[in-house]
Length: 73
Image (cartoon, rainbow, N blue to C red; front, side, top):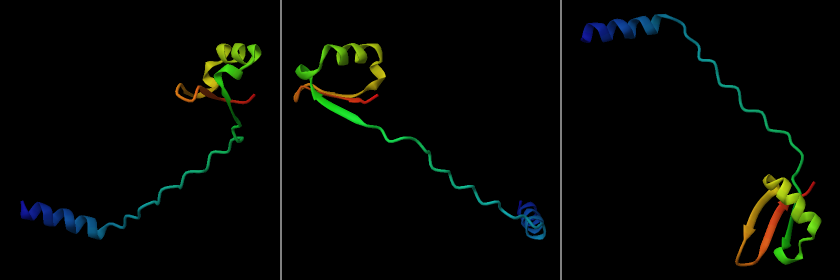
């Protein structure tokens, strides 16, 4: 066992192995997101219809404050 560990150590010390440093991640370039926050009772019929057609635009809904935040077009 000691002999195999010694042989592995000797082999690793004689071979020139260079580690390649990792490439740092590039920043994601995207447009800033504009959020609109409104009282649930203040939403117009057009806004309600748009949010029903595209529910992924809704970011958060606070039932206590009765407020909805959604992404602007």
